[in-house]
Each structure stands twice: as structure tokens, then as C-alpha cells.
Image (cartoon, one colour):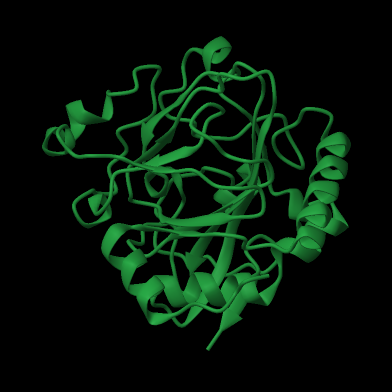
Length: 269
């Protein structure tokens, strides 16, 4: 794993809101991640969560038939697959996330397999952090390409620097690729950057950076394994997101989110 970050990479991430790292995994590590994903997905039998079929608080995803054809989404695979647990709880990932975010400690918010099937719909421009149960401008995600991510099969696109001007209000995600510009009209003329990546490469992006993905215009799959990270010390903002009914019943706004069974601490300085 290419886990050492230079000052130029950290500065680029903090300025642009994203960073691509080529050849992040060795060929052997790439096969290990692919094997873990295949095993974990088979174990889920189509359920998005370890304990239920779907996620709470999905926002504007009203047209289920359309969004089911954007990608297969499986969350918190680390909780019910030992191979994925070993991968996701790697301290090196936590250290990288903490260094990019500029925080002293980092916790997993949730991991997430995102699998674009052949001919899948595009992922429209959106933000991540407004969906989550905490509000922190430093929150971020890693996105690891397990297949080549190309212009044809659904690579990510970013609007550089937008993380500096977006807010925690949730514009949602719709079938309309440009709907976010009704919410943020100042970004309508921004130039996007395509994150084309070979399998085994990765990107990090801030949860407030506007991003999206092409449709999959090929007969093959575009598999990615991702993980969202929460800077340590965050508190509950009232949004349920991945938390269970039981967890939310015992939380009030402002309570610390520090349950290591739900959000393990990966790294602390």
C-alpha cells in the first residue's frame, strides 16, 4: 500500500478537495481486496446493511427503480466480513485520512461497496457530508478502484475547490445531473475534473466537494470499495443515516459519537 503522503499531496487535497493516488495497492493487495469484496457481497444476499435491507434517511431518492440502476451499494461490510474488517481497520488508512483532513484522530463512519453494473445510470452531482449524522468540514472518503475506472464505465468527476463554499444543508441527489446547480448556481460554470484510474489506484475526497460519476456505457462492471471517515470528537447532529433506531433512541443532538463498536478509532496522533 502506497500510504506515505507528501506535503504537496496534502496541500493539493486541501486546496482542490480531492487527491488521486496512482497504484495505491500492489497487485497482490488488489486481489485481496477483490476477494474480500466478492465474499462480503455474497454473504449479504442483496442487503445494503448488516442488519437490514436499506439505509435510513435517503433524502430525495424517491424513484427507486432509477436509483437501483445507478449502482449496487453495500454498507459496513467490515462489520460482518472478517477479510473486509482487516482491510478497513488498517491503521495506515486512518493515518492517511487524518493527515489529509488535518485532524488528530479519525474514525470510520461507514465503508461502502459501490458497484456499477453494465449499462448503469450516472451518479448525479452531490455532496456526502450532509447525509451523515455529524457535521464536520474535514470529513472525507477514500475511493479505491477495483476495476479500471474509465470515462466509458463510470469514473468519478470532481468540481475542484467547491468544498470551501458548500454547506451542511443537503441538496439531495436526483435523476437530473445538474440539479445541484439550482442549489449552488455559482458552480454552474465550473470546469469538472475526471478521475480516471487504473484498478488499484484510489482517490480521497472531502465530503463537501461536489462530485458525481458517468453512466456505465460498457458491458462490464465498475467496482469500487470506499470508506467514509469521521474526525474524532464529533457529535450527533440529529440525522439518523446508518444508525439504528435503537442507537438513535439513546442519542440526543450534541452527544459524542465515540462508540468503537459502531465507529472504530483507526488512528490517533
